[in-house]
Image 1 (tube, one colour):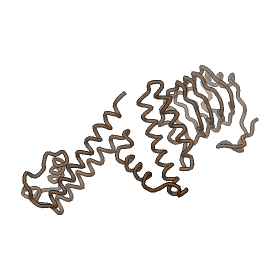
Image 2 (tube, helix red, strand yellow; image 1 turned 90 degrees about the vertical axis):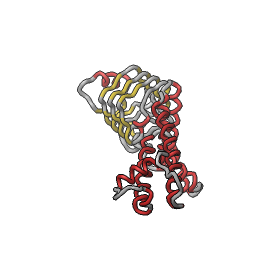
Image 3 (spheres, rainbow, N blue to C red; image 1 turned 45 degrees about the vertical axis):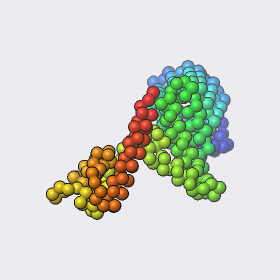
Image 4 (cartoon, rainbow, N blue to C red; image 1 turned 180 degrees about the vertical axis):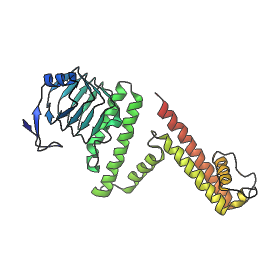
Length: 279
């Protein structure tokens, strides 16, 4: 038995496993969970784990070479300085794991599977190191789309670092964090084009209410309904329904503002969609 003195597994006593033990486990069809096991500084090669749950295990400083994990779940697993070489992860999830200075050389893994590893702002350093390594390693093997996904989570944790420094450390200003928050909310740093579609719908709907409540003369039809104003706002947003002549300053300002918002949001939507769908 090995007693862990620090990290997420501090205070636990783990059973030490060898490469042979894990190889036999990968071939087993009956055991579906591996609990309180240590493979510290071990080396494991060419095995396949399917549907296995790893709970409170220690793989710190281990080397995993050409190991495949399919539909595996990792909970409270220590991967400090673990080296993954040519590994493959499929439909795996990581929850409350300690992943610090890992290496993913030639490894294919979905960065989103690590999103539940860290929960507090104080862990921003570990998260940034993890997603920076994933971004670099995935780009090296030609997985540009997964690399961009890792970049998204990297920027999310950059924002949390800025918040931590502003709110708790008092060593940074409000501006950088707020700007990052706005960019993230607008289009998810280029990885969430659906955000822009929602913003466009919100702008069109808000403008339709303004036209109906304060500028009813904008629509020259008998007994107009809210849906009529919404369609009119939709056309203004896409530069199809601007007034032919000057009617009033408020109407001109609202129409101009909605048109400019539409121009910006549609341009960003096209750019984000192309980025999202590109290989």
